[in-house]
Image (cartoon, rainbow, N blue to C red; front, side):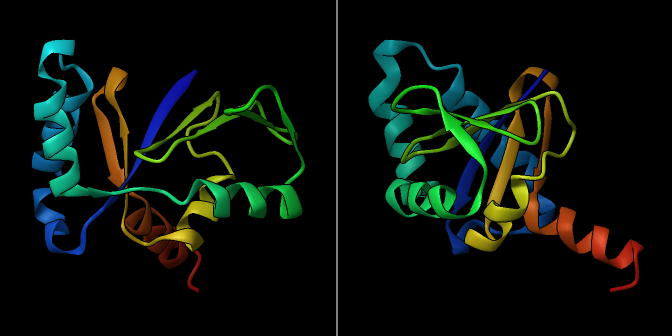
Length: 138
């Protein structure tokens, strides 16, 4: 099962050939000890923007077949994917490499950077969809 963390990166930090540096900064925040949280919060605020959890919840309620497990955890009905909406990031647990729910986030914001810290994997969501569209000549 893959665990993706989605972050909205501020425009001034979107330099495609600097993706590894962004990943390393986010990974550093991910592994911070509790006594360094204020440092991590400062880095996050400099680099990222928060998600609009209310907007995403409303959209999901109207457009996507899902089941709410609790206040934060959502199971997407058509796939084995769980979604946790939070202001600093969105967490997606899935058994798929690219779950269908990512299309919604691509529409929501083009500056989303996705990290899988367990597998040292990262990519820009917009780059993924742009390369997919080129492959099918759209």
